[in-house]
Length: 178
Image 1: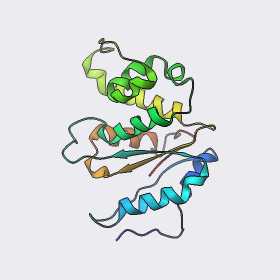
Image 2: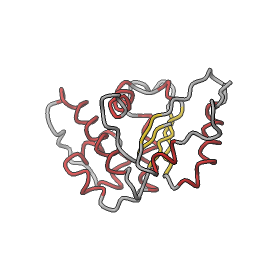
Image 3: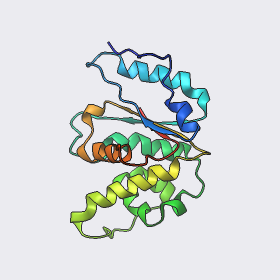
Image 4: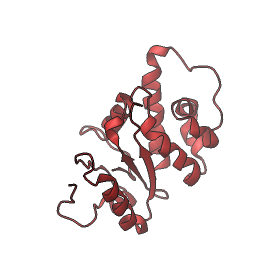
């Protein structure tokens, strides 16, 4: 089964509140209790002051970019505490909306213009979502993304998370991912 190693509660929520960042990988066989453990960890860390946003992988959705983050986008719409998010996003806002349509409620509708050549579409989407995560996570709104069933994540979502938390990168302060 899925067990915690060496502590009662991963310190990620407290770390992001204090300005840190981090990525916690939780791995177990199917039916090993990962989802239940995630729920318990969130309940334990709820008093930390961090905003928890949930994303859920969907079987057979790997061909659709960023499906794992659709719940995160919906959570942002419901719980965003960044009043000037549209301003912080700047020119990246329409691309973020194209990647995660639920964001239109926060960032406004997107024009039909695709923003440039298709060959650069993936890179534009990645850059826009980098900007989004850096814009929403801050001292007044530390954010922990809780991503479940990541085995169904598409390549672009994996790439986004890998780039954000690469060893040679400066991860966004006040952002954690479980």
